[in-house]
Length: 388
Image (cartoon, rainbow, N blue to C red; front, side, top):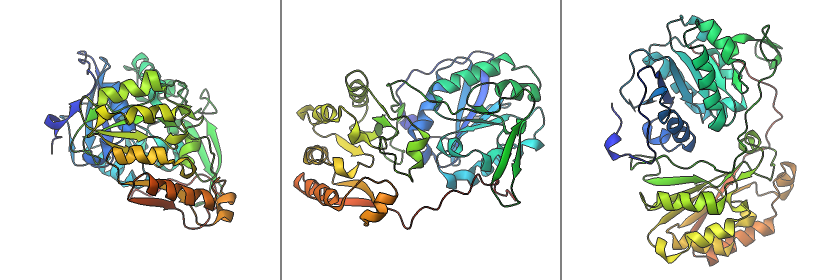
């Protein structure tokens, strides 16, 4: 099945690949509807598509663009653990051996990135030649530059050279020892000449990610998304997403967010504000004032989960004005004692206040995120799952 390209509104100018551009397949291991709604996938695809030295084609489990006959790279954006089976399906459908050790020199190199792999690449290391750890804004360009330097070299030489790039993990060049057949990792030893530690890369700028494509076929149809903040200052003990993306960073409102929103509203009337704790942006009130202007009548606004004790009446009124009927907050537990244990700084009184503000602001309903039980202490890095 081909992708519904005619319905896409591409919000960037793609480059014209050079005659010797790197043929690359960039895959999302889920459906087009789910994958194209991923802001991370959109961002990396746009970076690749704007480079004249790369000829990138997108692949999803239910459709793809015309693929190169001899790709040099196949990359995966990996956002959810349960998508791992689709990676195996993708490799099979692309005629690539699942295990990296079974791939001949002529086989495409396989790389992966995204939050799942940054959190713990080892369970999936058997399938990937290269893993990119951390933010991709600068790492992707450094990775491609290093590859160009050894593009004509043998496969093993390419991997050794790429392993020198900060943030690039080449599993084949590290020996992993486990405490037992089903136990945690005991030690990881690099091969001679290979960095002993792979450092997750962190983007330090305040120009965060925005949508690069708008389409009615996305899971959130025709939505233009903007990343308001990255990470979260609260440091709840269970929140892997926040720890992965530390430190807490905020997009510049006047120079970044507002121009991005105005640009997006030229193409759609639906906006999405994303981030782990968007209402803790220090200039969030200025952003609300912009969105509440009468000139945006008819615009629909959606938010990522809002921190409960920042749910003000003003915010709820803006949401109601912009066609939102409900809001989602993460209380995690009805027990204050358990919230204290997991460092969720939230009282019952603050939950009651948030509900009052939501009702007073005109919202019709609220959704609560909650956890069942107390997260167990991690036991270490897991072995790769079986692919049989």
